[in-house]
Length: 590
Image (tube, rainbow, N blue to C red; front, side):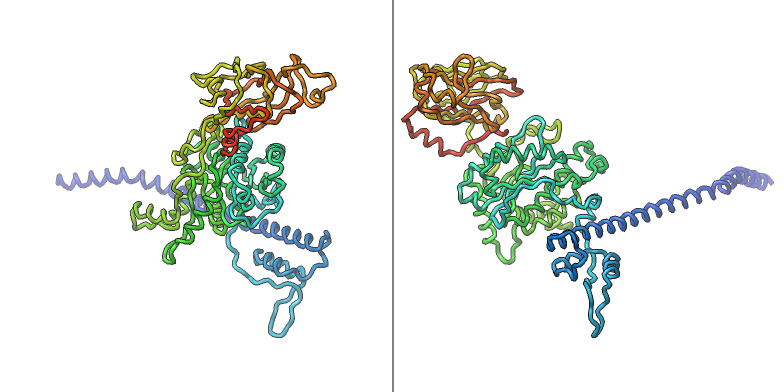
């Protein structure tokens, strides 16, 4: 009896517990089902919206291609009237094959094109229905928003092509310190005439502000006028619409947005630069705008590439990258014919990883296997990515294009072939002094004797570096070089070279019309240029010179360093001068 009562109590308790749950499920069940259904429908609408957006982009691509097609026809006819053109040349016909089937059908209908059947004839253009493969517009859909997105905003070129080596140098406007002009000077100075004739240097200005682009281009053209005119240097800048809205990039690798924007833009810059360069020469070498190199580096790279290609056995893979620098993407050589692989890869993943990482992942995708360990992967990568025994390039910049980033990396494989100063022991006897305070033992008198370089603290307006000769001296030429490989930004800015004749010049002397004079009677014979160098020859009519000085006219954010001081006396062609003149010299970045 007790057991029956206990069983009834348990049954009642179970009913009391389950009843509210059943009521809640009955009430909320439809609502949960409705919410789930709405979620699924929203997801479906989202997928549908993505599809419609892709279709919209495809139509935009058709419009862009047709715009290019009409532009080609207009260029061919030399007239803006294209209505009487029929049928298009084969090259243009192949170009139109890239259109979507719908656009091709509309084009046939608009031009009254009939299909080819049996013995019937065809009027107009009948394209082949090719499968449409993904291209840059799929990875960079914003390019379709402007028909001119791939048209350069600035291009200065003499059309040089079919060279052996193309050097790609991306640059931007730097707020603190730019090294571009120094890098270009160093590259050109370390090429002989034959190397210059088989080389093309492409400077890519990655700026959207046309005024900034023109400013940088003007600096290059004014400092390297002969090289630009000869075709050695090309200058190119993309249209602003080439870049996406960087504020809408996905945050990847947990990086701050500014860093994501910086490395994403760098990927797109490299892709554009490579796309322009790939038809210009046999090999392409990626560089940066803040580097040094070694003498005859072009010959060294070309010889190494040809040897590696010749020694590749039929059963071995050919190299993909030849590495001439251990740092980042500097000094990486590719066969120009294989650049489209990298260009596409960079476009696909520009928002995801830094460019040097993408290169590593690209090679790993080609050779590494999931069923093998990392050691095997590294061995296979070494067959495709081969290193030169010594680095040919050294990174010298410290101010990165990423705001707030300080880059002090140095390639230890580069060696010490770039000296910190150049000695000249034939300078005439003189008392040297300066009111610029020297740092440690880097004294002016030691620099003048060729024992070291002069390194002084922040120059101020009115500061002087004086060379007072023991005897009045006839000078033929002077050379002052500021900055060095370790401190490229420590240069003399807005500084003139002035001298004091030992004898007073007659009022009718032609010297007065040749040179400006200071209030204290010094002749202004030169100044430091944008490369940190002051050099020139002196008019013999000046006569003997009592003193030569460097006169600072403005404040400087950097210290001042003289890495070379050479004063040649008239009639003195010292062998030491010839020896030093033959050496490749470092030029501080501008």
